[in-house]
Image (tube, rainbow, N blue to C red; front, top):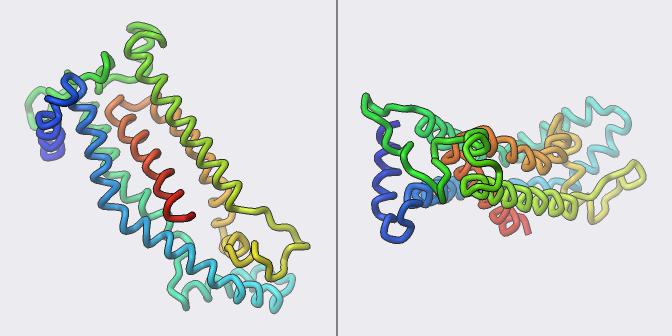
Length: 247
């Protein structure tokens, strides 16, 4: 953790002439961008995986016709097909999972009063009057929701809400509902929503995932401001990245 703290402090020193008292906050945003750049190849691989699953759709439709009402046999056949073609229905989860270590590092970094036996100097940094080691509850107790610190959180909440709404609307546009009458080889089939329905849990996951963006509001409210900046930056990056890769 001390190595990561040194990286944040070094970046803050470099950014200080541009961002002054908010240099540490800018350093956190930059660190987030660097993490997302490192994970980006996996995001591109996940996008290729989705296209590969879409290419399997005609074969999955044939399996559906072959197995009829035997849903268990159909699920096993679809899973076997994915294994044969080396297509993972859960590959899209990897980018998010690999970002968790960076989030937890920031969380502990700005929740610890000492680092390596020394006082944690990062806790003295602020973003427009809101301490990076503080939480939304601390800001409310100190100056209310409309003080300088409160306005920082209101801005973050607004960004998260906007990104979440964008994500949900885009998911609705790109994933059409499927009924029994639609179980033929149609354009909607070839784009892939039926394929995921036959893999246990993936169909539900695909429907629920866009709405999880709204839970980021709760995360921002309860974690230190530094970790909240990471979450908001990463969430925004994800929304833009998916819009580009899955267009």
